[in-house]
View 1: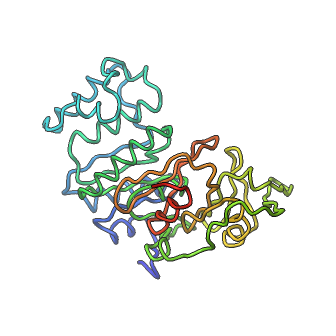
View 2: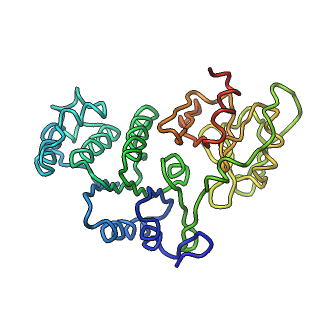
View 3: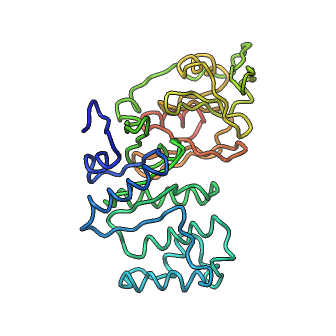
Amino acid sequence: MSTAGDYATVGELIAGETGRSLHIECGREASRRALEAVEQVYGRRRRACYLESDRGFDRDTVRSYLTLFSRLAGGAVSPASAAAHFGLKDRMRTKLSHLTAEERALANFARLTLGEPEVVFCERPLIDLGPEARSLVLGWIAGEVERGTVFITVGEPLREALLMPGDAWWEEDGRFFPAQTADEAEGDDGPAFAGDEVRVCKVQARSGSSTLLFDPREVDFVESVNRQNYVSVRGELYPTPSTLDELERELVRYGFFRCHRSYIVNVQRVAKVERFTRNSFNLTLSDAAHSSIPLAKGRAEEMRATLGMR
C-alpha cells in the first residue's frame, strides 16, 4: 500500500495513479511487472506497446511494416502520414534492417500512432534518439498527453523520466517514490543569477579512490539522482559529496542556474529551450552528449530572462 506518497510495488503505483501519465525509473524486473500491471489496469482501453527489444521484421520495408499495423488497427491513420510525422517520408521503401537504430525507433513510434491508443507503454523511449529525434518524440508525447492519452514509460536513467510530461517516479529497494511534486518544482527559490563575478572555485568529485577538482567552466550540469549527486564533465558523470544547495551557492556566480529541483545547468551550455505543452519544458545542451535537461515550469521565465530571450 502507499504510505507518505510511495508505493510498495510498481503494480500498486500504476493502479493507485490510474489515469495519470507515469514515468518510472526502474530496473528490468520492475519494467516487466509494470507492463503486466498496465495490461491489468487498462485492459479494456486501446493500448499500444513499445519494448526495447522491438526491432520490427528485417524483411519488411517501412511501408510494409506500417501498412500491416495500420490494417490491424482498422486503417484510421495512414502509414504515410504516420511515417511523415516522424521524419520517415523518404525511407518508406527502405528495409527495416537497413535503418539506423534511431530510424528504427522512429518507425516504432509511427507504429504506435496507427491504432490511436488511449494508453501507451514504452520501455526506454529515448534510448536510441539523438537530440532532434528526441525533441520530435517528446513533442509528440506531450501533445498526446494533452489530448488525454496516458503514457507509462519505464527504464533508466531518472533524467529520462523527468523529461516526460507527467509524473516521474523512481525505485529504491523495491519501493517507488515520486521524483518531484508541483510545489517542489515551482516553489524552491534559489539565489539569483549573478552574472560574471569571478571567484576561485573548484567542484569536488570522485573517480574510484581519487578526488577530482574541476574548474566550474568544465562542468556541463549537476544532477541529483536517487539521493546521489553527480557532476557532468565532457559527457561523463562523476559523484560529488557536495549537496545541490552547496553547489548552487558556489556556481551561480559562474553562470549556473537551478533549472529544476534536481538540476543545476551551466547556462553557457544551453543550446535550445523547448516548450512542449503549457507545463512541459526542456533544455538541450551543447555538451558532448547533447543532453536534455528538465526545466521546471516555475523557473522557465527566469531561465528565459537569464538567457536574454524575448
